Length: 344
Image (cartoon, rainbow, N blue to C red; front, top):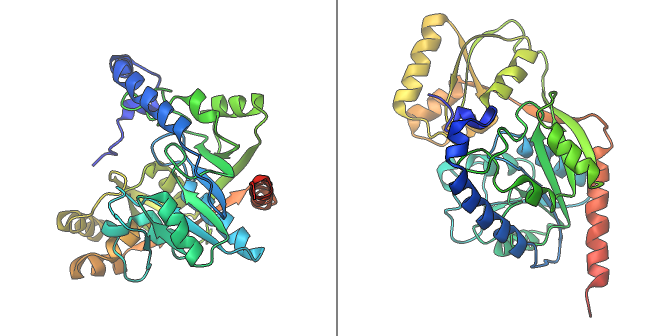
């Protein structure tokens, strides 16, 4: 099964993108207005947003985790705020990584909750209040750059160097969530993930606007973990090819791959097919941590399958190891200025 994103999004704009341009233009106008209305409700704690310009697959969650770890090293209690996948929860919910199911809170919040308190909330203002009640001093928003009601002290954009902004068109003609020029107006910095030239247009716009551009990459936590292993790699994420490339870095021999749409709810048929193919080829099943958390909270058969699958833990490695500290210092500095400027 292929990714739910149309492949033409990630190629030079062709007749399909241009035929959808009128709809993209309307979508873009609505997104532009939504972004202009947002960022007005100022909350007590500092707010750092880690977001994307496009639909998924850029690596923002590992970046958010790296920033939370840096905050904790500095004795700053950070918490994550997310809408979850679909934003279906009406009241703010503190994620329990051991007992909550991905279908309720989303797979990314389950990963985030392993590192810091994580709240899923459709109403982000209420979500912030819930995190404050947990003692959080710094709110790291995982996504929400385009539509947040919360004032952001620092908005960090993560862009994949190989995919960039695709064909440069707005949904549904391309992967952009809003026109690029409008989004960049609200960005405070950019993190270019990996190697490639596709993100150069974003880097140039950031540089012209005086915004810092940081460089980072995703790396396996255990570089030699799969050395020499013959594997069947499968993933239901925004950019499966990034996962496969990272897995190859460990020395694994990828004999077969199976890609599913982002946030894919694995079925009994899916796991039966994967099991059969792995058994026939004497292959080890390997997937992402994000996919594994979706599998862990299914029925008994799904949970048993999850135990037979190995996940590839990853981390964000910044070219300059001081980058996370710099981002946090800038965020907290802007927050202090905001607090001092507040009328008594």
